[in-house]
Image 1 (cartoon, rainbow, N blue to C red):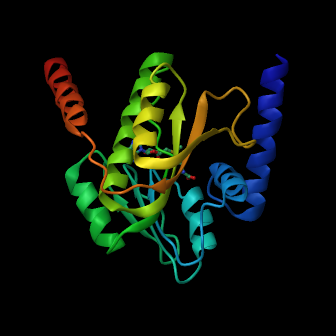
Image 2 (cartoon, protein in one colour):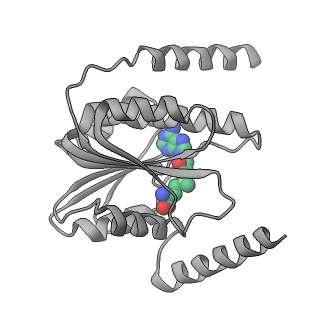
Length: 224
Ligand SMILES: C[S@@+](CC[C@H](N)C(=O)[O-])C[C@H]1O[C@@H](n2cnc3c(N)ncnc32)[C@H](O)[C@@H]1O
């Protein structure tokens, strides 16, 4: 009961603050808090924002990289226009979306941020597995577009596959930390992986991903 009350109070606080500051989502505060603590963005950075709708993180990233920076957002859902920020409607697990992202960035990214979340089933382990699947794709995006020494911030729902995900992340980055910003709901199962010092050009297997994707399609096919 106390936890629910705390949750509601906290969400109400961030909801009001987001309205007051003109942010599109309360999630903006999580990225602000992460940046203050870990120093993610620099002026002039090129940023890829995965799972960017409705645009709260885009607003924060756009502001922090300034006029000389470049921010490109990707989401399954359309994002209402936000100044000169480019947005792509697409599924980041699809090659065509990946290519569109590479085209729009026009070069390497300094930072990849991912707040992607699957449609929630309500089943803890299913939601965890889907979240990890999206994170693996975020790592795949890093392999293709992140510059050496670049940074990654990505959300994941907690569960038993976290050690495997951390291992995959540590293979690519020199420093990897877990973090829960104050703006996350106290009861939330989400956490953020903060990774810096992208090694670039490390040989990584994406085979597993392809197999997983193929399996997903088979299951879908049987159900239809
Ligand atoms: C929590 S919301 C992001 C909120 C955003 N960071 C903000 O501040 O407004 C998660 C988003 O991930 C997107 N998403 C989930 N799977 C995706 C995928 N495969 N490709 C692209 N976007 C995806 C969802 O459509 C959803 O809009």
